Image 1 (cartoon, rainbow, N blue to C red):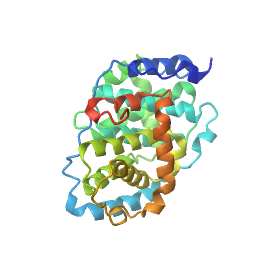
Image 2 (spheres, one colour):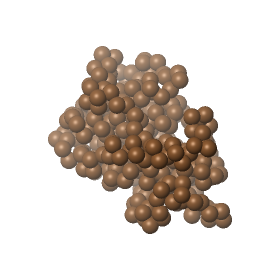
Image 3 (cartoon, rainbow, N blue to C red):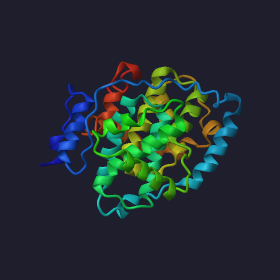
Image 4 (cartoon, helix red, strand yellow):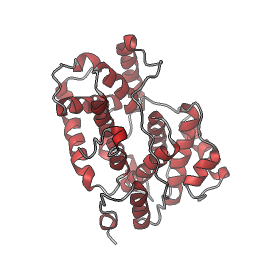
Length: 296
């Protein structure tokens, strides 16, 4: 059975049904169903993100991200899983993240943990979902003030794994990554750039949607987090034809010419999103909580 045929887009279906379709299409990657809940992410008001120090903070983050550049085609070294397997995992994690009402940075930290682990260790199809839920659990303990109870992480996996298995995988992640949990994520940069560009709510949500879509696409890994965030802000501004001039290079360190290739791929990803059978992100941003930016 053709994977795309099984998972064809159904505009009236909930993201619960789209995950079930993906699960049936790839039985070996049985990422499970979740009840529908909304978890809108507010515009950042974190006191750590002090605007008067934005430029210095961005410069330091850009220097740090150079230490964690991803291997561009690391999935080729995985004998049992593919880039499609990774995309299905991330699609599922988007839904889990919404269900558990976690901070968006928790999601991006979890994706970083998964990708960095996959660069170092081989993972079977059975272990992939275990890796994903363990990474999200680990990220939530690091980022959330009140992380969800362990039982909720077991529940979203329909008890496919035991507490001991998740704890063991958590230890494997920490060991493989030398306990380096966080890296500068696209979301960290995007919050700073969005604030500096004075994006309105709908503009902010469109850029947020764009960078979240890139998590599904292996080809976007070659772009640095800061570059993707800058590209998302510029696309959003041009889409809404803002009259004010955003000091792009002064704020981000990137000239518009440096963003062109990333913008081209990001726009292609946006156009293809409506046909992508992995719909959790698009359905998330179709809600009024996010100004329905994925369908407008």
